[in-house]
Image (cartoon, rainbow, N blue to C red; front, side, top):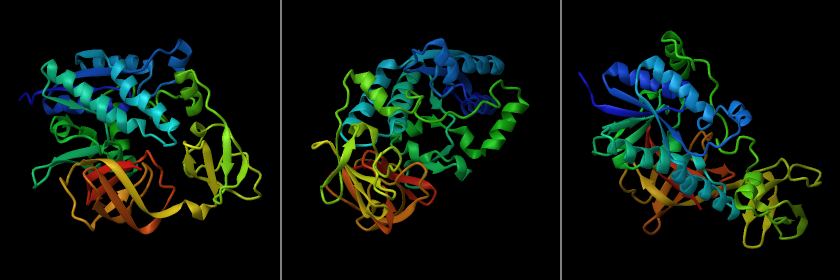
Length: 358
């Protein structure tokens, strides 16, 4: 029985490749699509950058589509990616925040743009190789659920998806651990079975964020003052785009003991330096809130919150402030709460809501 037509976003990696296979086996009419979003590399960079967005992704995804005997296309989303990811990334760093470009890409490019175009060509769903699951809850809302394996769980990066997007999305690999996905790829002879996972931010393969921003804007960032918690100048920094909250390495400050970035002040071009204990807080605020499993929260309601992708999660109570802001109060102090990153709140195994840390 045909379950409908699904466009699978194929990155050329093993996860999205096996996702396409699993959906075909389940009876879906599968179409493979690779999103061309920023790739203009020279051949050398193409060989070096085998991540989810490199040109080599197209070659690998095409070979997988041939092996699975499914139609395959490359769609150009460079305009959407530039506006919603690169421009946002640059602006956030310039304003002293630490952006989360993968979250922005998921929300506005991999879902909003790809879903719109997929529905326009007659698809019923889109699908990805994310390690997460989607369920409709008893309250009628669609929600992201933890994958079966905590080690690869990607729910944090998906908190901003809308109800409409979730209703049209399939995530088949969330039911499997990573080693099982590789075994499936081996068993069916996929050419990417042992391909390494992509790392870091795809459009900054050398991890030099400040250099990327300078090249992208054509403007050098201005050096400024390192100041201590009392406001005293203790050195010169290279420009605020070089720093993030909690950073210890690369400060080049001879303080005689480890010190950390505790605040970035774009208005005065200052980077505040403090001790490890200065990084801890029990309260954060977030805006641009997206409700998922919940459509509202009662003041004082308790959740488990993650403040970064690698965070284990911590109990907090939440209250709403105005129309689009929440305050989270943690039972234990949290280290290096970083403006620009996401706070994602969970109820049990489900993403309840999330927002951007202020």
